Length: 314
Image 1 (cartoon, helix red, strand yellow):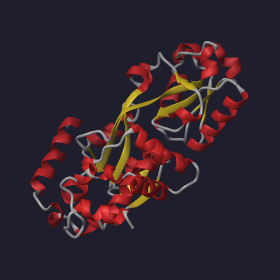
Image 2 (tube, helix red, strand yellow; image 1 turned 120 degrees about the horizontal axis):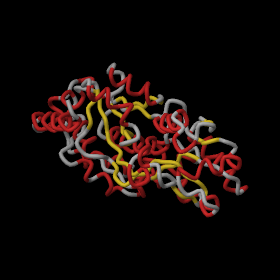
Image 3 (cartoon, helix red, strand yellow; image 1 turned 180 degrees about the vertical axis):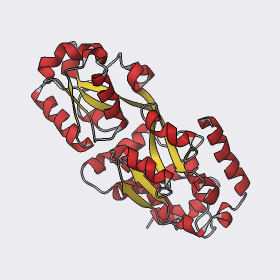
Image 4 (cartoon, one colour; image 1 turned 60 degrees about the horizontal axis):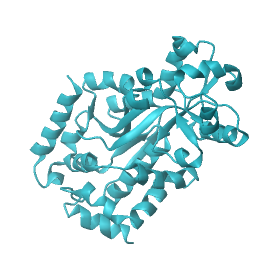
């Protein structure tokens, strides 16, 4: 079954739910189980969703897990929602679960205009490291290393595949795996010292304004066209939308912008808890939630926007 068909099935589930949607929800829907794979952008969006759901009377929880464990948890109905399917880079990992009917995608991306590919500091770009084909030419300066993120991530898998297949002459390179925070700290240290480094970069993310950097061209066959251009989608476990149509309607309405995410990610990178950063942003920008709550009620069947607005003014 194709992804498009799954999206149509999701839309049909919402249509069949009728109004008010909460009347058809199972009692178990009060607890909405999110998964976060350890990226600050997903922490930000999950934080914003959590704040709104709490205001609606739900009890959202967040589990931190690697991508493979996250998808396995959704398959086993231990996880309900994942807000961070980056397409196309994560497609090889999630596609088997979609084809087998264990995971469904919501009809509309929650973010467009994203990017995910290898990057370098601007001074290195100016020296001539501008494409994937240039990386091997700078092998000595780079110490034969490409810096990725946490083990099990889709980006690391793409880098490892390039090295194993000797794409772009990278057979003698080593993938350095680390947490997002550790990788960014290494990139910032190199940036301050004006040392050579190639690292996995993406936007939206504060890294794009915290240091002068460029994304590399020539890697479209690996990270996707237009220098890793991406959309971010919401995935739910099979049957979740039909069982919890009110929550599903809210999730389907979620639309983020790069600016919105950057403003929430900044404090998170400064060690502020995601829910705290998200609540502060939404309190300062209450109009953001209005389109998210179209056709959505509180858990007890009252107007969703009224409930959330009241909670954000406390």
